[in-house]
Length: 69
Image 1 (cartoon, helix red, strand yellow):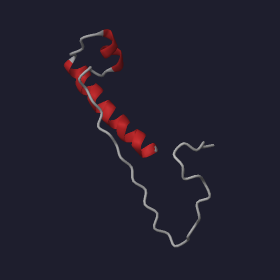
Image 2 (cartoon, helix red, strand yellow):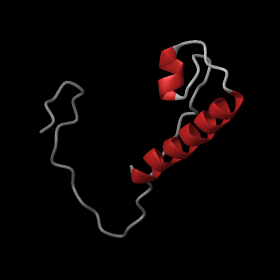
Image 3 (cartoon, rainbow, N blue to C red):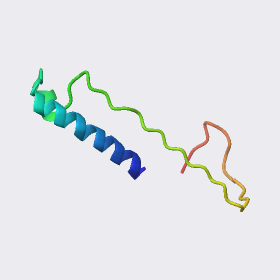
Image 4 (cartoon, rainbow, N blue to C red):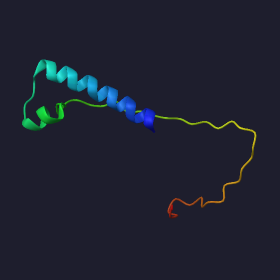
């Protein structure tokens, strides 16, 4: 999770640095955030694969609507 947030932070910093150098803001909201309305952050996908030798049983619910605590 930390790696994902750091990737987003790096991309945000790159976009805001570019926008601040160009000084091309249409509204005060864009100026304060550093992002223009047309700027987009790319999605980050994390995949975790477990290939251990221990077999552990899952004792939780397999239903979609089950409560998660």
